[in-house]
Image 1: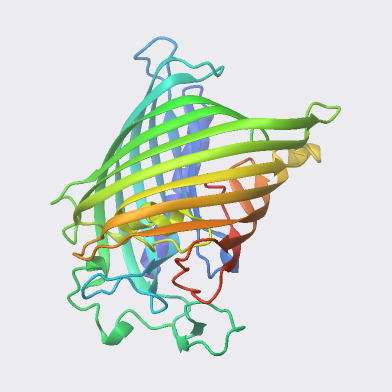
Image 2 (image 1 turned 45 degrees about the vertical axis):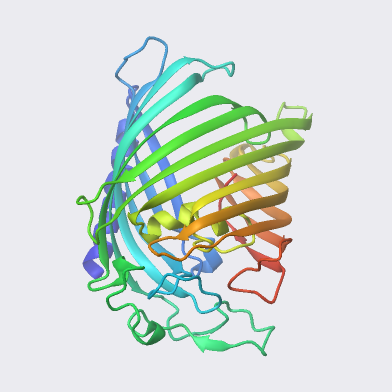
Length: 403
């Protein structure tokens, strides 16, 4: 593990240095493409995974349109969970599995713009295709043996079950041995995966961070072909994502910066994922629990999900000080609703639920890329959160503005 941590640090430093060097040339751009966090480290406020690299724009396949090749590297340390019984794949409530993932990934991507958008400086359509490789190792949770209350640190419900966080080997009396539901956690608990992807983006959104007007559409296909990954990983995933926004009101300061703005944003997302084996890293982003705020990522993980997220965003001054340009406070009021159905991944168990929530996020936005703050969600539907089934109010930290 020590060697792996050193390798991750070295890889990140090399990629960062390469990106800065490439960024000095006119044909190259530094890319900072991903951050992630471990919820047990400073309550998720500290980034524990980073992906950086460089984009090359020296090719021209169509006059006036963007042609770009991206190469990115990254890695880090994050938390994973599973809400499925490792024997038959049925959903679990309360007795979920938690563990940590040491990971590194590399990505090669090509983008080609076509046509001129009504938004100045953007291509109307962008086509893209690429390849992602990753290596992951799974270890016991960093909070193993610590007491948890139905999977959380909440001690306000002493009547509920309190238990120590189990190790991977000890979870449910060793049920992970030989599991076909969580195959990457069997045997040596490492995984190497290859994913091919392609998609199309409709670029019609004029977004300054504090204002947003227009439409942004994306259709994405991902395919992990069998034989190119360990643990017999083989799946495909198709996602449609459409965002429509309108700035309702804005008050500008004397210097032209934002003083206060109100923006209404609606997002529609539909996904179908299936295959002979869908690993946990691919389940998280498509699970309905990930998309309806207040619920748990990795929960409600079936083949089909559809969700709508409606936000009213109130943004404050974005130039409070000259050296803090692009850093501003934001209040998001939201209503989410979604549906999932089909088979729970890697099993023959079927299920469906309707989820809905409402709430608020009070955040500080950094360059409209990182949004640190607090979220309070109120569960509206009858289906409760699997970690906190006794409560409709869910509080937590925010790290990204996802929608």
